[in-house]
Length: 282
Image (cartoon, rainbow, N blue to C red):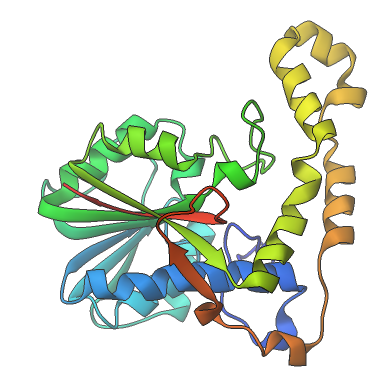
């Protein structure tokens, strides 16, 4: 099965407007595109690494500005898709095996980008330590990740089955300061309609009922959880059905009204942002 057949929000690629299934998917793509567009200034004439390139379109965008950029990912389908669809003289894609050590020398890069990746990482200390190792003096690490404060109760685990842990500003700042000298965190917002659409998408996952389920799963012994699995465990079939019901389907003419320019940064009111955009210095 190739990447186009199993595309998810975790791995998206540019499409014509008539190819998007719904508005939620389109807005998610625009939000990711916004992050790449705003990163162009940082990579100008720099030697860069895109750690976890997804499908490669963002790495391809940044190649317009970077002196050289390498995209790495553990997914074979993603690697094959990117190699086939995106090519520039200063752009290279590499599949990595996911081992603890990255296949690069110390101080190899000026900039490391890693968008929507840190929430997937189990050994986050090794992930950040390796990024710090391959960054040059005064190099920058730039990442994005979902804002936990808008998605989850304090005790709730991520509802996205691919996410190991999600972070809010305070948690992410504390983690990053263990490895880097300077940390700046911005909130990514959309204009009112985009923001409302995104919050409506998340509402079913942050209700009191969902919070109670998470608390029960946290407190009860494993043997009890197994006995009542049909009652308190997440049912993937129902979850998918609910997701489909709440997806916002509109016309192509409506979709034409929106672009990545409808997103913006906020440094002060980060708590209600959709994503966190982080720039740290070694």
